[in-house]
Amino acid sequence: MKMEIDEAAKALKELGHPTRLLIYKKVVKAGLPGIPVGSIQEQLEIPGSTLSHHISSLASAGLIFQRRESRTLYCVAEYQCLADVIRFLQDECCHDDFDNPIRCPDIECDIPDQS
Image (spheres, rainbow, N blue to C red):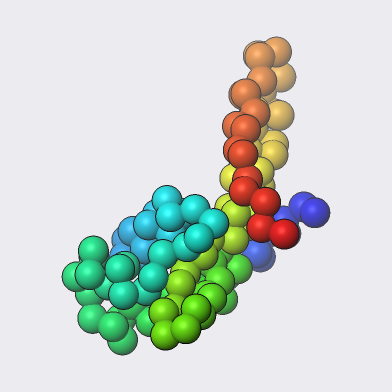
């Protein structure tokens, strides 16, 4: 499914905040198991209420979701959304450069299967 401009703008807006970008990088790096919210808080040394606000913003953009296991809350990346944002940005790369027959290379991304 092709990402619409409003969806891409929302995702990029949320990633445009330095703290949210740091959080998102940690979540993406964690892979499919996700990362406990407490670990993010410890690693980034930010207050819980601030972290909660940033996680909520990332979740509302579809970039992450949360999963609870017992008393631990995990943040997990929505890898398909990440791939869709990347695809949206490169979709028309160099298409108007008629003087140059060389096209930008496709960026391949191995998206973990979240089924």
